[in-house]
Image (cartoon, rainbow over all chains, first blue to last red; front, side, top):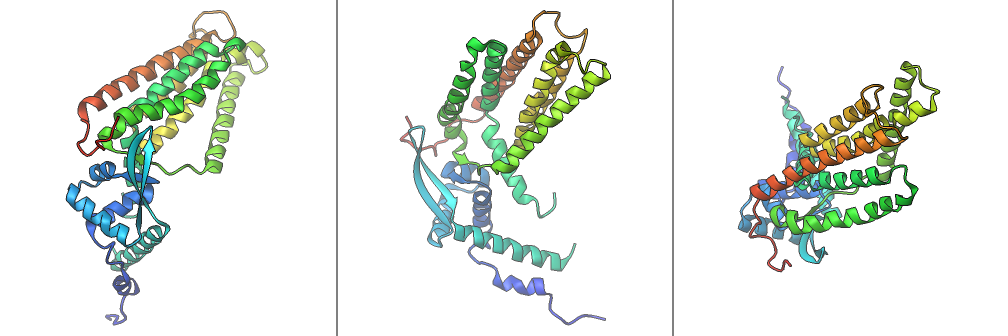
Length: 108
Length: 210
């Protein structure tokens, strides 16, 4: 007999953070989630995005307060390091939980 | 890979990227040369300290000059010190137990000289722990090979009848340290050369570079 009750996990998809629900931004934030910080070049190489794309997506994440930028010196060399803010970390954790729940609801 | 371990893979790939320059192995080689020079010679104990103080910043300087302009800069999250310390302590105890079991099997458990001759086995196991840790973090196969080489060469040099027939309490330990130092420098040197050849300096690296 078909069950008419909606799948909880799927229903929660509407709660997804739309800012993170974009492949490029998700890639950037996933890398920053596992690193303390990374510069533009490292993210460029790891994500495979174009310079313009990476730049605009990082800016959006920064404007949302998910990513912060710090100018630092590594052995007297200036480095612009990006890192995740606590808010960004929380948002990504919540996003992951929601999407995993939805995928679990769909089954294998 | 399940859909839940993707982040672990990203973390490991970042580790891999940051360690594929071979500089960590070169630093290990230099440290092993210091071990070979100073072991059993109190007059040279200060070199351990110099090595520990100089190698870290030296490695950072080399990476800043050769690695980051090619792959970019990234900082890995600091380790959980308690977990790391517990892991190291367990590894040290395990290495002692393995050597003790080996000596017991040879009927030399209470032989003071046999324990000294077994020093390369113990050192080999201890260093293999460090290599294994780095290999697990980065997934670099050459570092797994160094871990195996460290444990096997230490065991062989400590084995009665196989080790060098040199008298002296620390002779075989010195031989082991020199062999491993040369191996680390060769492996690291080749990896570094390959890294420089295959990864050109990026145009994206800050033009303010020194």
